Image (tube, rainbow, N blue to C red; front, side, top):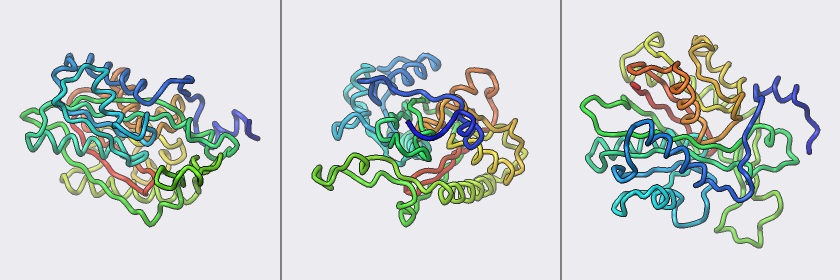
Length: 298
């Protein structure tokens, strides 16, 4: 479809395989499976959930929110709060922060926090600089009130002045008469985004640790947004982390935007690397620009 090769993709991005949603398979289809697996792992039934927050840039429809569709399919009670958050690749960190605040203030007791994307639907398959990077997927976590909170702190930021570097330059309010075959597709200035991501995420680590009076040696695992292996390796070098401390799943999933952090977290928990009581630093950077971190005691 484009002038590229498996060797070029692996060398530049570290991506070996990606997953693409089937025809007719939607964001909510992926999100429901991830949510079901999170509920099963926690031993919690859907009826016990009172908040659903979905991070996505590729919702099923304009409205209702895809979170409401997920709520209905999981048989979660009608009095539950459910809504979507759009913060691109940083969406899951934003969603985690919002859900944590609901729980801390008594607005919810148990929250499903999901990141799910069908990015293949907004790719320009003739642009090799972007179409080789992104995949479809979903990941989910369950948060619940406890005496010792698991989310120790979060830092969130945005800078809309940089929106032109990574965007989909069309939306409903612009009108369908302005929609062209490529206007509803991702555009990205990769080198500029790379530099901004490494700089912003690197500074965020130091800020997060300082806010919690911790040193880098206190962090057991770095769970970053899986943009590509070069960004994660540059971030690890900048911070003095070994790559053995970095959870990497980009080789298996590609960049799944808001789904990448919960997917990486799920993989590392299920394969036994991440253990109870360990300190995790979750980080993401995305269009907006939006960026943020969450320091979590698993």
